[in-house]
Image 1 (spheres, rainbow over the protein chains, first blue to last red):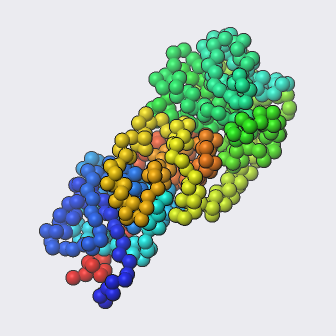
Image 2: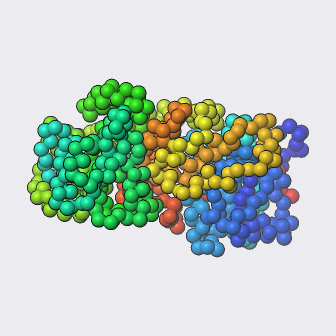
Image 3: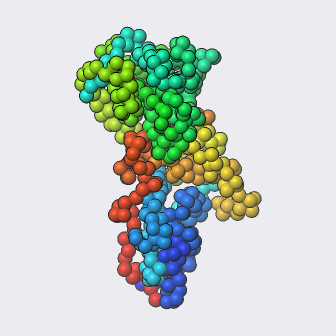
Length: 146
Length: 378
């Protein structure tokens, strides 16, 4: 366990996008069990990760988020059958665009979280937050000319 | 491989025009879509020709690509055409047409796609400035010196034999000769009807194409590595895009960007002043109009999987941003991860409409059971 913060370390802004069936369910289970996730992680609910427009992720990364994580149902569990598979392809596409242009594909994460996986939800939030903290601030968020 | 040998003493353009005339007179098609020089003489436009004598005014394979052929076809064949229309296209225009067909924006029924080995095209602005020099430059381009070609054309490895019905093979052929290759059942049937099914050897052409393809692929890899050094990273990318005047002309000339209501032209992108002021507060200042980077990245996310590297966007850009080079580099990356190539096949599904249950294993962040961190630990 790390010592107390001296107040000068970088605290990333994280957007955690969750589908309304599994991802959000994971967050509910976490709260029912009294589990905590870092306060710099803002969760954002979408109906299905398959319906998440790529532009929302891009806008977040340009306007203030140091990292964006996306969680939806496990393969085979999607409420709409295939939304999570389409989301996985869309995220792969976005990561490739970000990577090719040197904008940091590591700032975007995708991980399946089921309704009952409260532990997995808080773990993902914490792990991703630490991962982004290690990467440092996202240079796009402070640029005036975006 | 075999094809019908046609005499082309005046060059392949004559041979194409002759074929179009025969097709019109023998009622194999009712109209032909061919580029023609504009009256001012300094550019080219698409002409839908129904009278064979008008074909003398046209010029297949023009030195520039003023309007991407797929855009012309989209206007004509959005819901299919009545009768038959033969269109003479560059390979990238055929590939864009195929993508539009898969996006359900072009109905291929009723179209006869005719393509030709493409030596590349000249930058539109250079040609407008000096058409005489442009014509001379295009001659050079045809004889193998591509120094005047557009950047995307210099590194185009898909310059030959798209999935068209008929393809005119010229590379590596003896001068005064060209070969027509059928690429589909419709193409084979047409050649039979024209009495052109006679076989001629295509070995020389195939060797020349393979050799050129190899050269271009190497040049492509090299050019993209250089471009990546120039544009990768937030600072360099924003510097590259800093000349953008938000005119969105790259989108409006793009053959793939068919959406009647583009997100980036819609009300959804317009924010209330308090939103913009807040963003300006957060960043210390805000460039207006907003969302330049979002437009380019967003457009990449929307169309790069179908990008055919035709270069129309770069020709149109008034600010000389290397848009086509950027999009083509990103398109190559996004398409290859799904083992997809835009316009390669009519039946291959678009990567966005299909999926495999077991794929992209490396993409999903592996889970560390009970992650031990500052915040998560009790």
